[in-house]
Image (cartoon, rainbow, N blue to C red; front, side, top):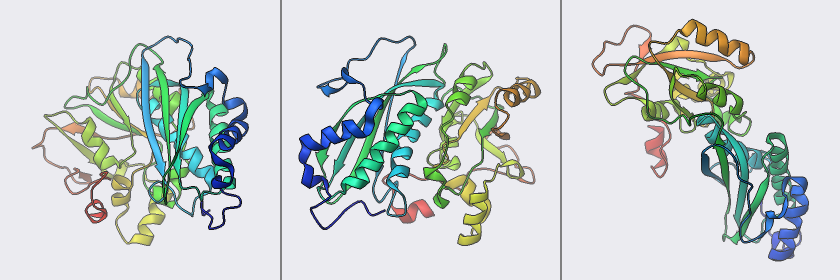
Length: 326
């Protein structure tokens, strides 16, 4: 849906800031508590909570994270969920959200209403109030940013560091083909991330946002590199469709498409993998879990059917589009 209109009627320019804020309150409804716990003051006053605080921030930008082929509800849902995925990657629990919008005055009111109603639906679904935000003019553009406050659900936050040579590499769900629409239709792995944080064998974790090829490099120990079993990779149907359309190998899409928002993590090489996988299936019978490889020595031989990441690159922000496609 095109967010902008060439006619002033029905745009945010018709409302102005004060009336628009009042409309946003209505659109959010119960998702936005009253001041001082929510919108209405210079800051929201949050109740103290147990556990170490977690803070993350991510935007959705028109022309980058969504376009006219996406509905405003999809854009709003994606904004909320991609931040929830960051909390999940640390094994945390979300607490409260702040949303800022920068837009051209020609933005359609109907578009923005559907966007905020999507945020409200996610807020209620996950029990995360929207406690404030900001509005600003952005000539010719549209960007929404959500800051999410969370907390450690257990005794620790799982970080990207901690994996060791020989550790096993696992991933949840299926990977690849995000451009087929999956980037706006995914489930943040909150319960799964919190469960994994409670497993001593899990040493490091992150969510797959920029492509498995790039994100795995953030997990690898300094004295090792990922060695992946190509036959074990959990290929999504969308990745197969993307491969048919592009003429590229399926593995290219699995490793580089990005925006999968699945969890990839390292499990200690000494762990009882059968027990670990059995307990996972009992806890999450509908969520696929796949052991895709391990962290091997840099000079280790590459067996048949296996691959390294030497020939693959995920999405790198601020890099030219041609370089990202290489």
